[in-house]
Length: 198
Length: 270
Ligand SMILES: C[S@@+](CC[C@H](N)C(=O)[O-])C[C@H]1O[C@@H](n2cnc3c(N)ncnc32)[C@H](O)[C@@H]1O
Image (cartoon, rainbow over the protein chains, first blue to last red):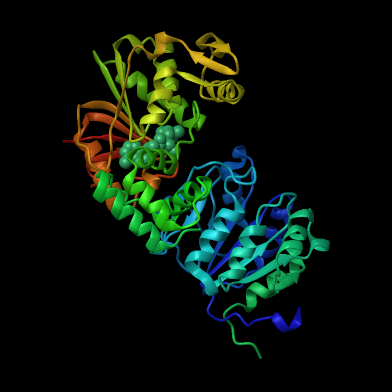
């Protein structure tokens, strides 16, 4: 592990994926991220259609970074959090906007973590960090591989600290994550992004 | 995934050979869709795929049908339909005729949902529903009014959540895994192929629905299409978009008034 750790200094986007059990982790991370941030945070989590507004509302309440509502073609700007709306896949465009797509579910999911991670990897390459949290589905693994291949950095929540270990385990098994971190270490990691290391 | 330059080559050829212009489609989604057909149809090299598209019009048609995203539902977003049922349609009901356009209707679930509401409000007899799409194959399904039975339970739930109080099963006959919707509903529907990229306005409407279509277009094309709707909308008519779409960047906001917090805008002046 140690030798493949790379210092992150030109990160533009941190994309976080998760499913069952990821909300707890997000609530332990987002409220404690040091404001302002020099990158954008994009969150792609599985949820029921009925939770539509509640996730945005909850995270907006808890996070001290502004949560922007994601509508089709919104500009993706550093300093903000964006949350993938339910029932749409979230995609990244070359002109740094977000776009939406209602095509078939992938891994029984829309939004699918793989779809967003792959799309972000194409646009942001080595300026992208992907973080995969708790879940009981294999979504996210291919996305992590895509980020890896595009030169970005991948972080998996340590399965021992994840409420549901299947999703992080699956990614560890099938890709080479740069970091495997416990929830509080993920927070520390995010707070260190784009900062000089001493 | 195919490469960006390959996608641009395909866009050029499809336009040059067949006149269909995908140049203003959102690239991220289009690229995924084209890659999907490319692998689905077993191609190994992009130039083979490209020459097949160029030389075989039937294949090009198939490719276009496959790259458009046709996923739809009856009463998709029940809260939207609830507002149509309780507020918008009663307003339109005071007119002698109601002309509705479903632009990008896909397989027609949205159009049948509308017909059911109009019927329950006693307005169907004086309504006409134009339903258009670029994809000819989905229009055939829409005309038939036959939808997979496995979806019906979700649709019945959506129907109830959107204010429906009848027995939903009265509207269709179930047979061999399919539900065929009553012809009484389709009597007032007119289906035809229409391309929002290149075709013009063909009538004046009181309500235009174009839901989950603009997300596939870039800002310039969205602007063109919203202006096409503006040309096709009577004063005091309504334009309804998908839950994550807006006309904000496309047309002067002094002409349109958003209806409460819905993705519904009323044209308030010519
Ligand atoms: C996701 S479906 C939306 C169906 C329905 N309105 C709904 O919201 O459930 C998008 C539809 O737009 C159609 N479409 C795409 N490009 C078009 C164009 N240039 N002109 C007309 N229709 C188009 C597609 O063929 C597809 O059926």
